[in-house]
Image 1 (cartoon, rainbow, N blue to C red):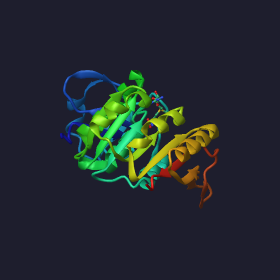
Image 2 (cartoon, rainbow, N blue to C red):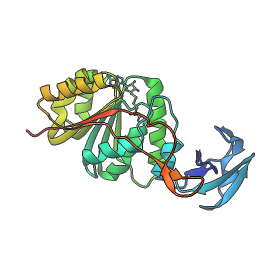
Image 3 (tube, protein in one colour):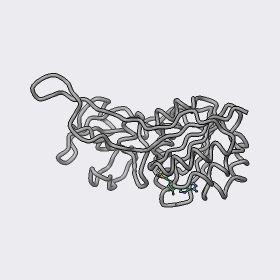
Length: 262
Ligand SMILES: C[S@@+](CC[C@H](N)C(=O)[O-])C[C@H]1O[C@@H](n2cnc3c(N)ncnc32)[C@H](O)[C@@H]1O
């Protein structure tokens, strides 16, 4: 692993640019045409550099920066829900985790982070244009961090690739599904969840939650938790004090966690 190859640069407003420190003049999205090595390699952590009109601070390449500065295509899962799912599933080193679809890889980065070197992470995705983005985000993680799990990516709808998944592992400690149609996916992968393992479903609308709930029960799993996490951010008030910031409560998704007891 080469921890110096990637770096993060922060604008004053918190916008993050993730830059691969390779030589040669090239276009870097949001920063223009430049040679990354010439421009950035002498900038120390915490130091500022002027690029065009932008003042950038070089900061370590950590998960929050990477998540903010990631490439995006499909709708991504962010810290609020990713943190909940990884902790409710109890994911940690040595675990085997199955995830579909990879989409932009937003959730995948959180999974990779908690798995570390000793885990196994299987991602599945039918749409190549999504997988390309997700896999590029994971490449950054793999090359930029000191630990990364054994990662296997399988192309296809999860219902159609169970045999390929089984070639990597026939049992998983955790399964996370973020896809439009949960029922058929749950039916297909239920036999892969080991005893004591948990499955999480990310369901943007209530009909998906209900369908996932029923499918998990039919698969013999116990519903451990279902619901929604509401995040309410606070800020400094202009006349002093701190208070909830103006703005709507955003909805991301309803989450369901189910347990395989036996
Ligand atoms: C909202 S995106 C996932 C985003 C991802 N969790 C993230 O954080 O970036 C949903 C993905 O599921 C994929 N998908 C749809 N049906 C699927 C299936 N049957 N099996 C696997 N993936 C599927 C879609 O192509 C899409 O990329």
